[in-house]
Image 1 (cartoon, rainbow, N blue to C red):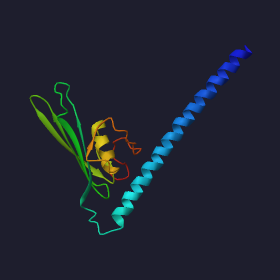
Image 2 (cartoon, rainbow, N blue to C red):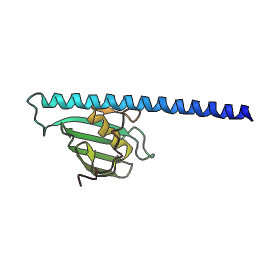
Image 3 (cartoon, rainbow, N blue to C red):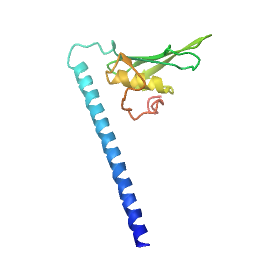
Image 4 (spheres, helix red, strand yellow):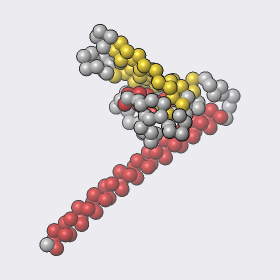
Length: 152
């Protein structure tokens, strides 16, 4: 009985330590992302920059419909230094093409984003464009693609 309790305690301790390491790594990733965002904001504020000019862009190519290969669909994020802009997505199939545009304000979309659109938005905000793949490890901004509730 005592051995079982000791083993359970050891397993719980190892699990807790693993969770702490993952949390520590995620916090470091977020701090690094915030520092990069601040550097880019200060760079834009430090010189004669047109805040309305498109500055950040990223495009993600992918196969939206499994009927075609070759990454013919795409999501393109076009943003100014304030994080305002648009995400344009084109879903291409054999018989039809659909195009969508979604507004971005202060770096957050006003509508729900697909994973590919979120990846394009994050890459543009971090200055990682122009071409990004879904496999590129980009940190999340803590948003989930929903519109910010205070802005609506």
